[in-house]
Length: 197
Image 1 (cartoon, helix red, strand yellow):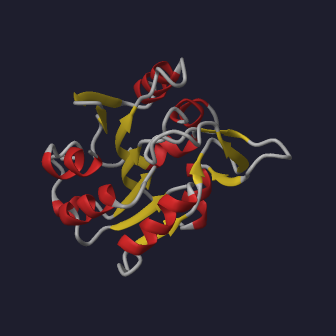
Image 2 (image 1 turned 180 degrees about the vertical axis):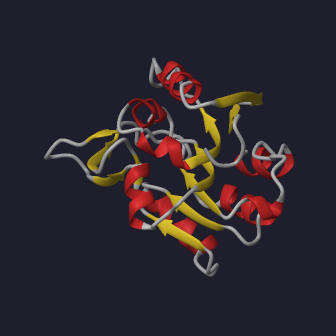
Image 3 (image 1 turned 90 degrees about the vertical axis):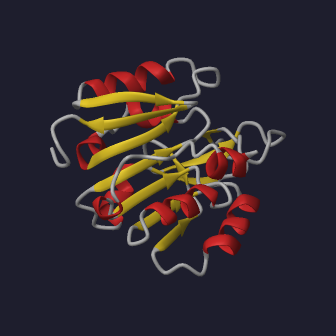
């Protein structure tokens, strides 16, 4: 199903030219299909992939480990650097939700977009893809300095998992001069005032 959505339905197809994208962050990379799709569109771009679940991450490494311009991080995207745990381990492998971890719970590393920008010295993120099963609510609500460094966002909003997620995404993007278009389940957000703000 995921392969069909990405390569047949082309849910991540954009009108951006191959030379206009140098840095991509793929949050919720799963086993790497979205990153492979982006690599076909933007062969010279560096792609930073985040995937927290261990089995998905092992398959992500098998699928993408040989590419020199793809960085693989076993982290969940969150609004801060924090220990996280999974809410629903019985879910499909592409549908794990996370929350802050208690001391006795399985812990994974959560990182913020601010952390990624600092750790990798990113002046810009040309394209940010977010499919993180509801955690977009926290990412778009708190510690949002990252938004000034991003030019284009593809986000799947999971209002059914995190009530308030849609409002968090729309408020932050509207307050930072992004326009919206909708394609299937994905929202495409682009800066209205040119490539760099």
